[in-house]
Length: 124
Image (cartoon, rainbow, N blue to C red; front, top):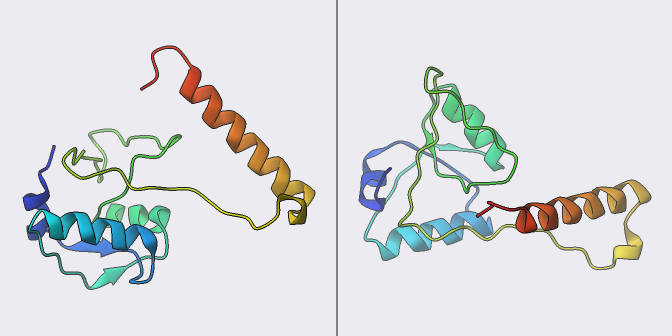
């Protein structure tokens, strides 16, 4: 477990400056009085995790369904920072009818999966 103040002393792998997730994280850290610096960036969370696993820095990423927590014997650990607000994640589309059949099937499966997780007994 880390506190936001602990994040000021690590090398960050950050998302691009114009990303919503980076703006949310930067605002939460600024509210906690934490200033971070970075010389490494990634376009998405998966790449940030890969760079962290390679030892190029630390990535602050949201807990997302389906991610497997690496074993404690591996080069990377996921450490919660409960004092930070959760990052909002999602997607948008102007018209569902404009999606290809494959993209629509994918979107429908993700929606079904999210509903199933939310209604499963014992799920947070």
